[in-house]
Image 1 (tube, rainbow, N blue to C red):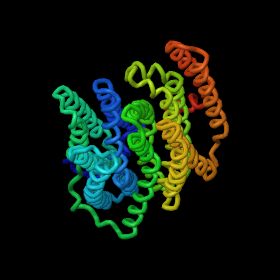
Image 2: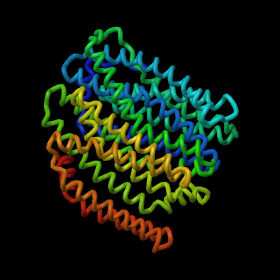
Image 3: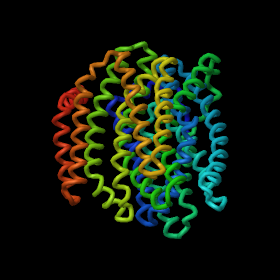
Image 4: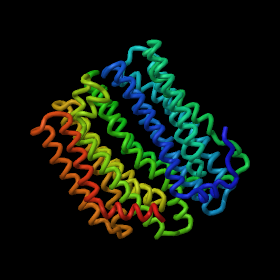
Length: 483
């Protein structure tokens, strides 16, 4: 169990942004690597059908853990940091205890829902998969909250330690389950991983805190509701697409979709890293009523993400065929058509992290903006899926998700662009040039030039061209690091 610091806000203040970023990078990378290697091990050793079953069950648990626990984790990061920034440390402890109780309650309810949905949607034919999905849902719920508390208090070092320990242990447990041929228990190592993390970091000492005022309590609950809705309709829709792929496709097709999804999501860790790094500092800026600092942080985050994610996703899209072949093998060849679509969607959804963080940490009225835009994207995306799935199967699911991502990803950027009078015209002209270049290279690799080596060479060519295109952002990032 972790003791809540009596002056946690000072921890966050003492850590430099660079140090927080480095520790956050390691923490998020450890969890992202855990999920990727989990998929890779199952896919390589057991094949597409097994990967489709495992990843769709994990996706359902992750989707449900976003229904409230993700909002609780974000609320912990935002309100604890904001309260500490205002110097009210006893109230910050009270907020932590209040959110902890909500996490246990919602986690228990969602785990029961998870078991029912697993039995109804997937029809596994036994009781074990529903029970394991329920267990995983509860563990993920507690994990999300504990992670939010760590980052609110500036304890990225402790988060990184437990991320590494639990990730390594989880992968070793998975290998053991496969070696022993306990295929029905493939979800258990992941549930244990998140459960141990949550138990190790669960906060205590809540009785020492102040009672949360009713007005602040209502604000927190509203924040949780809107941010959970945003999480469900962005990252949650990504997980839901995996569930839909298993429900409407063959076992082979679901496995191919799972492989593409596992390759499309690791690069989004960059956005997650910046989000959890910047959210406490933006919340502190709001607590100080420092609008100029908030604007500068949103601008720097957006430019950094555009530079780094554009480089990563552009190269991966162009080299998607050899990437699938090398990592998952010839049994997953059908993922070639799905992977570029999902990567494009992940890019659009990740590049808006600075704008979304600025909106959710600013005022109660702006918290709902990302949620409403995401909801609109989901509605349109589901409509596209319904129209395309009968003819395109899981590829139609991927296209529907891309359409949703464009709406939910670009919407918050446009809102912040206008509200804060951002100088982003040149930035997005450069991004558009990069998008056109990726499209041209993708056509060249698929239609005119054969061979995986040609794909790799053209991907390296894109990397060089992108760095030239984004020279203004490179200079800004270099100045920021130097400062």
